[in-house]
Every structure is written in C-alpha cells, then in structure tokens.
Image (tube, rainbow, N blue to C red):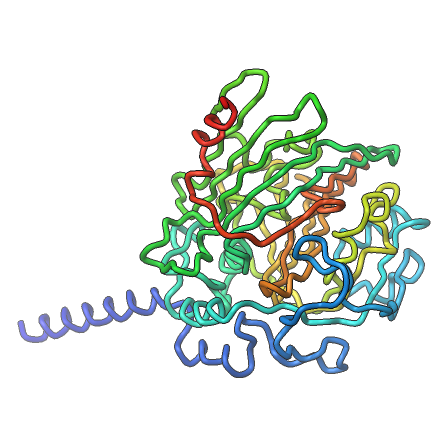
Length: 451
C-alpha cells in the first residue's frame, strides 16, 4: 500500500513538473543568452566568418539626415554602391544564397531583372520595453492548439529562441510594430503584357494592440492586428471600406466588415481570408499574401528547416519612398531602386495540414533573423512546381525604432502577372497616437458613411 502511495506521489510530481516545463518556451539559462550572444530579439549578435554579415551593434536608432516621407527617411546610406550585380548569367555563383523564386525571376526576365547586392547593414532595433517583454516572453510564452495559437505572450517577440516552425510564424505575426500607424497606399497590378494599372488607392489606419505600452498578457484581448481603410480611387470604387481584426482565437481568428457604396450598408465579410482573391487588388493575389502573409495559420503544418545566409531585399527606404514610375519596371520592381543584402534568415516550410484545403498547398518562407520580418516567400502548386513568389521590401523607421514592412510584390509565374500590395510610393506613412478601438468596427464605418 505504501509503495503504491509513493508511486502515485512520484507520478503526480512528474505530471506537475511536466506541466511546468510545457509552459516554458526555453529555460532561464537559454533566455539569458538574449543578454549575451544573442540580440535582444533573438538573432545571432556576431557576424559571419568572412565579415560579409557584420556584428549587430544596436541597430539604427538615431535620426537620419535628409528628406523623409512621413516617418520614413528616404536615404539611409548615401553614395553607397553595390558590391555585386547578379543577373541570369552570373547567378550560378550565388545560387546557394538565392531563393528559388529569385532565381526564376532572373531567368524569366534576363534582360531587365537583376539583383544589386549592397553591403549588409543590421539596422533592426526596437524600443527598450519591447526588449524587456521579449526576455519575459522567452520563458512564459508558448504555443497551443497544435501551434495555431499562443498564450502568456505580450509586447515583444514571443519566441526569440524558436524551437519549431509554428513559433517562427508567430514571431512574424507578432513582430515589432508601432502602436498605431496612418498611411496611404496603392495596389498596383502588372499584367502579362507588362502594362501597369492602379487597382485601388486607399487611406488606412492600423493598430497593434499586442504592442500597447500599457498592456500585459493579462490585459491583452488576443487581437494583435486591427485595421480600417477607405478606398479613394478609382472613382467607381471610391468610398468602399474594409475593417479587419485579427486574433489568436482559433475559433474566431478574423472579424471583417465591408462597406459597399452601391449597397449603402456594412456587411460581414467572412471570406476576406486565406486564398480568397483579394478584391482590393483586383483579385491579382490572395488575401493571405497581403503583407507577405496575413491571417490565420491553421491551413498549414509549419516545419522549421533552419537558418542560412541568404541574399534578401533589405533597407529599402529608397524604393518604398520613390515615385511610382521610378519604383517599377516592366513586369517587376525597378532593380535600380531595389536593394538586396546578405543576411541570416530562418527558413520555414508550410505544407497543407490534414483535412485542410488551400490553393497554394506548399510554401517556403524566409524570415530575417534580426527583425522577424518575412522577406521572401515561394508558393508551389499541387504538382510541386513553383507557381508564385513574393518579395517584401522592409524599410527602417529610426524614430520607432524598427525595421518595418508593408508593401509586398506577388508574382504569379504561370499567369505572368505581378501585384504590389499596399505600395507606399507617393504616399505617407506616420506613427501616430492610437485611436479608440471602437474606430475599427463595422458600426463606426456605417456611422461615418451615413453622415
């Protein structure tokens, strides 16, 4: 009898210890590396062996001289020249550092597309409160619901020392952002014949409740991204509005409302998600391709491939602030403006989850180790052939500070089309005081439309 009680107590202790360990993403000793060998957001602080990737020394936090578009400095590194120009003929020498999508574009447009490789600058930084919260998150934050949600996280990178692919995709969703932003953006579509058209022009406000300075894991509602925008052009779409609120709630990950001028009413928009064609961009991309990847993660199983050195778009202030005609070439972004650098990235493969469906059954993601921003994504069809490739163009906002992103350019390699979503060219982008969350509701849109 005594031995049974002892066995029961031992089993209970093991269960308690197991539950305790399950709640900790990493040990405290591992988390302490965020103060030594790792940056406060989890990247390797040291440079690479040959020095082509320098050590991280704090990122870009000081004001940059020269013109700005809103809060985005136009010129980060004046007079800097590329260290190499990679084209279809020379790409073989760099193949191990180029994504498949980048290589296909070089081959597809050999006379016009190239990769201008510049010196690497590790500009990523964040406010101190974000660093503090990231350190706390390392030992308190965990995934749940098979990786489709998180808990006990707030105000910083949730998994600065990731152990699996689902943790990395949540690092991207909960990447460093300002509390509140106002901007104008354009959705620009390139057709198969190389023509360029404006799908829509919009005014947008978006907020990140996960980064409210006065928040905490206990106070946080679970909504991490809320936005509202109104279309101003072309004339036949002017006045349309869309509200999106994204949450970690697996049963209700997104609430969306759409206002259509012709109907003069607000209606719920449950299909504004996943692989529904994005009507804001004339259907030229899917809704979850906005901002690289936007929305619920439950359609895929997320496999962490590992970390590697890759040539990626980076520090693209000059591109995102350029005039439209300067930012674009026929069929792709203007290589004279598009800046590429060598950085370490986390590579994650997403494969369709059992019982789920998606038009793109396999995707490969590349996330910058310093900022957790998604920089490149390749999408494959049911036969495993590369079908789509996306380029994100991160830019630096030293006043935050942070490496941020908004525009993504999605190439449909089979249809020979291009869609740049939320382009900032000839627009503004400002960090502002946050609005009441009631502003980001269907009711608020309806009230404004009725006035």
